[in-house]
Length: 148
Image (tube, rainbow, N blue to C red; front, side, top):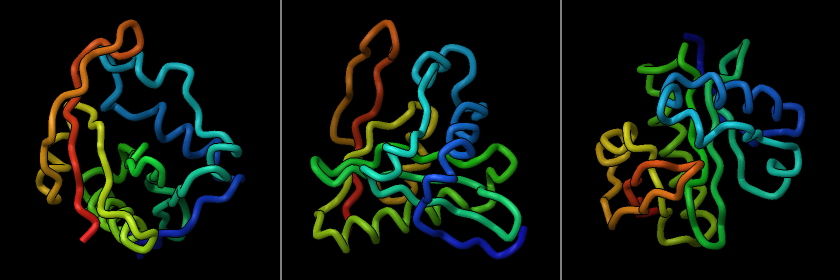
C-alpha cells in the first residue's frame, strides 16, 4: 500500500464514501438493516467534520464526527484496506480533531463487532444503547474515547 494521507472530505467524495459503507462486509446479514438506504450526501459532508484516508489512487476509508453533542458518527474502512492500520489512523485523527475543537472526547455508539477495535484504541464502555427495531434490532455498545 502506498503512503496514506488523511484529508477533509469534499462533495465529490460522497458517492465513494457511500459505496465503501454499503460494501462493508461488517454490515452483511443481520446487520444490513442499519445502513439500508443510508448514504453520505454532499450536505452531510458540508454539515459535519468528514475526513478520508487515501493513498495515491483511491479512498481507503473515512470517518465523521459531530461536534454537538460530540460523537464519532461514522468510521468505515474499505474491505480491501482492512488490517493495514487505516482504521487506527482514522480514529487517531478523529481524536486529534476532537481535541482541536475543544472537546473532551467522543461518544461512540459502536457496531457490536467493532467494539474490540475501539477498546483496543483506548475507548471505554459507558453503557449499552438498546435496540430500536426495525432498523436496529440489536443492542449496541456505548463507548467514550477521551480526546486527551
